[in-house]
Image 1 (spheres, rainbow, N blue to C red):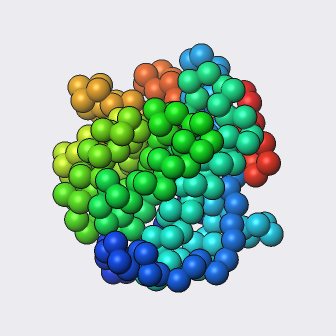
Image 2 (cartoon, rainbow, N blue to C red; image 1 turned 120 degrees about the vertical axis):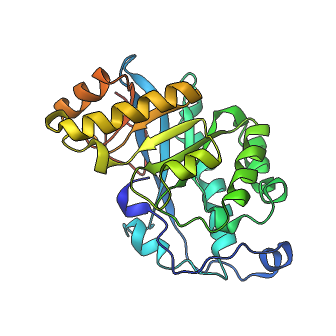
Image 3 (cartoon, rainbow, N blue to C red; image 1 turned 135 degrees about the horizontal axis):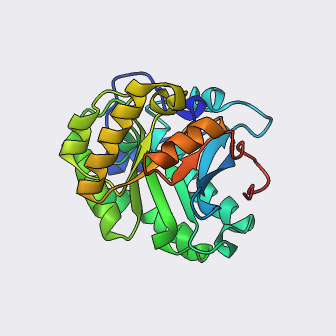
Length: 259
């Protein structure tokens, strides 16, 4: 998730119950999705595209997310999933072999994973989108009040065949403690660790340690925020092949940028 699309909502969060979700009012606003390339640098092919919230009249993600509150959080989370799948399918993502669609989700909007996932599964069926080509990211920057609840969500998503990811790893509230609680399929390194890494021995040492831990746990790494050839080359040298950032492509509303 780019820095402008993190879900920095007012605290405290509370997961909504099924009745509250059903009876909550409509969103009252519209939005669209921009898609940013996540590149397999080693193979020079798309690994995934991340769906990022944008306003229909060019509003930023922060402006859209600023309209989300306790009463519409569930509906917004559900609408994001459906809209991302629908728009990615219409833009031809499924024509790119093995390419994933990455969707950010709000764990505090999920009451029970097995029931709150129904709209996602229905959208996947409607647009003939294979479940195994969906990736769900939770940002480490969002305060997790109940790690066990998030662990249960990830377990159910894994059972459904989804790929799971921790976004902004290394910049949020929990760090390695969060990773010790549950292990996703993917860690996305925050740009605070990757920016200028080619000229920073300390960052190189920290990322090398994360790479080692991830290898031991069977977790893949995506490096975020790449803006230079030097950063790309340094990360490749550390064994990271999946990258995302303006150096490769900016988010686009109406098309999928190719390498």
